[in-house]
Amino acid sequence: MARVSLDKISVEYPIYNAGAFSLRNNLVAIGTGGRISAEARHIKSVMALEDVTLELNDGDRLGLVGHNGSGKSTLLRTIAGIYQPVRGSVEVEGRVSTVFGLGAGLQPELSGYDNIIRMSMMLGATRAQAEAAIPDIEDFSELGNFLAMPVRTYSAGMSMRLNFAVATASYPEILLVDEIFGAGDAEFQVKAQKRMNEFVEKASIFILASHSEQLIKKFTNNTVQLRHGRIM
Amino acid sequence: MPGDIKDLYRQVSLAWYFALSDTYARYKHSVLGPFWLVLSTLIGIGGIAFIWGTLMAADSETFVPSLGIGLVLWQMISGSVSGAAKLFVFQATVIKNIKTPSWRLSLQLLFQQIINFAHNLVLVILLYAIFPHTLSPLILLAIPGFVLVLLNLYWVVQLLGFLGARYRDFDPLVTAVMPLLFFMSPVLFRGHELGSRAFLMKLNPMSYWINIIREPMLGSVPHFSDYLVSIAMVIVGSALAMWVTRAKSHRLAYWV
Image 1: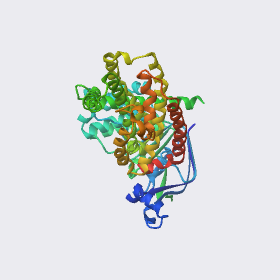
Image 2 (image 1 turned 180 degrees about the horizontal axis):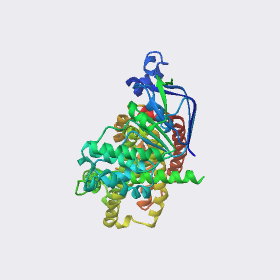
Image 3 (image 1 turned 120 degrees about the vertical axis):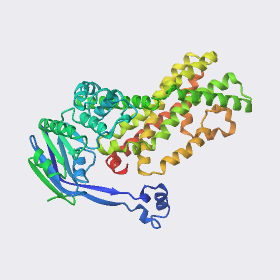
Image 4 (image 1 turned 60 degrees about the horizontal axis):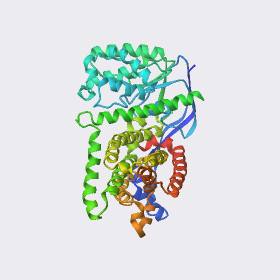
């Protein structure tokens, strides 16, 4: 059984200006007791999420809506375990897969086949699982002989096909998606939507962050509105 | 727990696969491939042996094997250390998008260096073929030395990785200090040849690492103190790297 439980979490983002990243400023600050360059050590932080409580169980399909910078992506990354909250607790049970930052692990010099293995492994597959997924990816991406060519020879649309095919090749229990639609030609769009349907159906918990009302309506059964890092 | 061991196995094989496949990608379009690295080491050995050998009037029978093995080891050590400070910054896309343990990225860098080292072993074999008298059963003693050096490099990479991600000056600083460390390490000479300035070499942690691998490969037993210092460095360094990892892992995604 999959479960996502967030209890009053707050996520704070430190903002480092160039000064805070510099070793010299930090050393000067130590040497002068921090008075002269007090400003350099001052690290501002942004409260990206505040007091967010969320409880999701099997079958939940949640849509996240809100303006740019309202905290949608931060929330997804917190559930994925990339960001840790400064307050509150996050409990996640089940295998999580993320569909953002598509193409992590991509090495343009290598062939499509090599990159299928790389990206699948990066997303959590074992080598054997990654190899087993190849026929399905071949079939879905329709890249044919191009899969044996280096990825740097691909057009943007072709890369997108490959990334999308790899990302949706395994079925996770908890699926987190951050606005990925809108690439590829019309024909591929239809295919991608169909694949997305299957993908979402097989996941126990699905969370989608999107600005598209249509997608939110289509894929989710519940929405949460974020504003300035709080749930409205 | 078996789940943890399974995950550990997955992470280690991921690091290994990426190290191999990155090496392959880097040399994909070149004829010599990774053997360019071997060639550049060979040119280094040849050049230094010719000029330095004349300058110091060194006996090539002992000087060339010592220099050759020293340079091969230096390549591995400096490759790990120089790559460390920019490691996490280079992997920013991965760190920001997929839950990634930082220790796996460090392991990947170390694996890459081991792969390079394996290529350079061709040169070591060549040296033994030219100077067969250097080879002795003592070479087996180089294995524990090698393991100790890898353990040391691992914590150095992890620690410098965090420092380099937090303070962007670290990478150029490391680059600036490396030539100095090279001259302070026993690559161009052996420790006892330095006379009264030998303490300079002792200040450089890398000297101990080179000694515990190279001395057995040249047919002599390293000083007991070389082992002792190396082991002490593994213990203190690993503790430090673990502490930083524990305390700062949750900040890494914001730093890079």
